[in-house]
Length: 581
Image 1 (cartoon, helix red, strand yellow):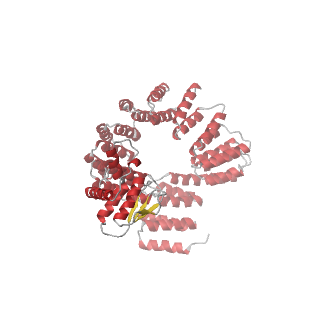
Image 2 (cartoon, rainbow, N blue to C red):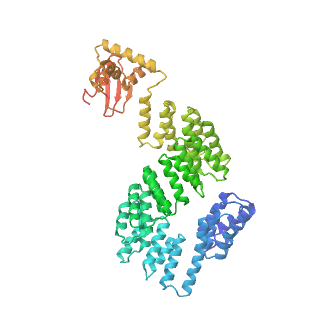
Image 3 (cartoon, helix red, strand yellow):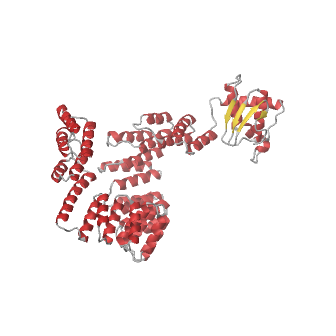
């Protein structure tokens, strides 16, 4: 490849300036990679080693690592890899890929390309390193494919989150007349579940004559993760009848199904089986049991399991803390959190959701504020949208809606629909129309096709028909009705469908929303000739229609009313619909 003179000049300029910004390094590294320029990449690396190597950001070094590995510069790649202060999966894959290519070259030199065992091993190696294009290229060129060859590709696609390619390859395998083995079937079952093809997975499972524990577990876990909890429980029962011993993964999935269904008795039976099979103390199983007992409302048994666990991780603590919070035991939840900190267990994002939820359920505003502030200041964790939502709920429920809104305004990221929905939900419960309308407006912009905010706002208006000028509006409406009655108007109570007394019917029909809206318009604009516009989301009733005609006549004001069916233009006692609507 011809030398890139502009790139060389840019690196020269970098050397003349000394330290550079992360943006400058990033641009030059990516240019080196695109140009496949090893010489400038090495010069750039030496400059980064001098000024930038203290950074834990592995992105730039991974790009250089991949360039060296791709170009066969194994020693340069190894040297950089050894010096990197922090490595991730990409770093390891780059090195494995480099060594894979070395091995591949040796195989070609040694004339071992026709050896099926070596060929399969090489394909499997590339697949496990995430280099699926290279693996597929080898697979396609393999003249002696066997079931191991197909399994290597299918499992590789599955591992690299490409279940649709697994399924396509499985179909090709069957066309080629290759009989799948247990490994194939287990992988394809997982692929079907990842794509949500539950019935297809069930059909494949039913064709397996000798089902091993892996197939049973795959099906049980697949059912549990795809909302088919009852099928998971039934399959577990059949598994036991077939004398197949479940492992901890199977047991934990079945317990999770019992938790989702709140099947306490079934969960207790599975708990007994877990003890019988010797996995009762397993960390995964124990955490699932704690979750199950909490979700079934039996925190005493959940605590017994938690307390007897030989070892606990952050998931175990989160489950118990969250379980206490869900069951109205906020003080126990917070006490357990403090104990977690005493035992030097580092809380994660989910921990804080559980703690803030406990504060919210208990109305513990001061404690909630303290824990929220500690997320970043004490534990160096960036508060997530879930944490902000918990605080908005806590502040709103305590009646301090202004603080909740102020918190939204101070968020480092733009509040999304989840945040505004949380605020609207609190406003609905507290009857705060002012802030509810504000939250709804944002939701209308963010999710214009979502009916939820419209319904919540409508329900709030229906539940609290409050307004700063409520008394004036009702007085205006009473005077208007009296004036209309003098002109010959009489309310049509037949449109009230509820079986109540006549006085109640009159009160109900006289206070329909369109009449109140009309009265409000007359209060605000009493001497203006411009039309009064009223929007209604359901069909106008016969009495209100008659009422509008009378008002348009005695006030000499045009009225335009839109209901769910059509527009009605009222003028001088007549309607554009001619009483057909």
